Amino acid sequence: MFQRVVALASCLFVLIGCGVAAAAQYELKIQTAVPSSSMYFKTMERLGERIEKLSGGEIKVEVFADGAIVKAFEILDAVSDGIVNGGQAWTHYWSGKNPTGLLFAAPTAGLGKGLDQAALLSWAWEGDGHKLLNEYYQEVLGADVVAWMAMPMGPEPFGWFPKKFESMEELTKMKFRSPPGIPSESFREIGMPVVSMPGSEIVPAAQRGVIDAAEWISPGDDLYLGLADVWKHYYIQGLHQVDSIGDVYINKEWFESLPERLQFVIQESMKAAVADQINMNVSVNSAAIKKLVDEKGVQLHETPEDYYKAYMKATTKILDKYSEKDPFFKKVRASLEDWADLTVPYQVQVNGAYYKMGKTALESGAVK
Image 1: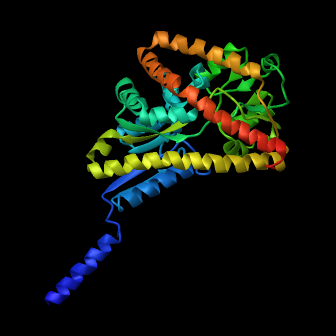
Image 2: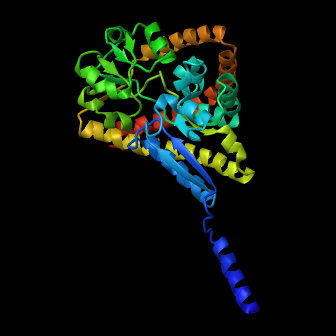
Image 3: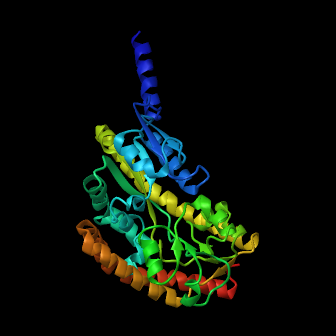
């Protein structure tokens, strides 16, 4: 009898040691703002799988495509109210509630100070970004959520045009689809007539002549949306969302009810999602560019130098306007500008080396 008990105990020990999943005690339902075909949806699926495995099966995660439970612009309220306990979107979706949202998700033109996406991520995880992000959601917007900047998407391309352009004057003659808020205000400041519309409306609007040019998200998503079937001139280097990072939200009451070890699992899984997205950006967008050029006949162009100076100057003017109106906007902007002062000198040198190395390889034919 004693030997049977010992044997049974040994088997149990082996099963536990081998990581047999415990029965799920918690359910996390994540409503995304993207279709299931998007690479960003795949990032959320990976996030869910990682949380399940690292929690030993104690947390079961379901990920839902755009509109499955609530619409994209209802996600924040749905997570806060507990309709779903997880969500994915972008802070600038809520800029209508308070304009500071854009500074987290996509500080236009790198704040006019050259802040790049790597430095923005560094601010989020090593600086005051995470703390200020949650102050924005919990105190400024009054949402019962915990949020993470976990989906780096940028830099987003300038966009698609009917022909190659050489100057700012040519840009002012084309009606351009732009994101709403500070990006579109900055475009108007430099004289570009802009309109905003959902991605699904871009191609029909172009076919009806409502717009002459447009931007969307990235080569991978632009290819899927069919923009190359309308336009053949693609400018990768843009400033309106040169830094672009998506958020993940979890209902604060639900999150704080978890044991500390499971809170840690989620926190570390969010960090891993950052790496997932960075890696996927390179693979998916590189493959998309090759397909756009080789199969769709798309021409890639360098953005003219005068655009950078004009757009960065315009952005600074718009940011000054919001800083004067909103104390929290001013506070977050100041934190980001301090981070830019710290990081831009170093990042310029590092990124300059990569750019020159790659350009030399392309010009010499070492890369085809």
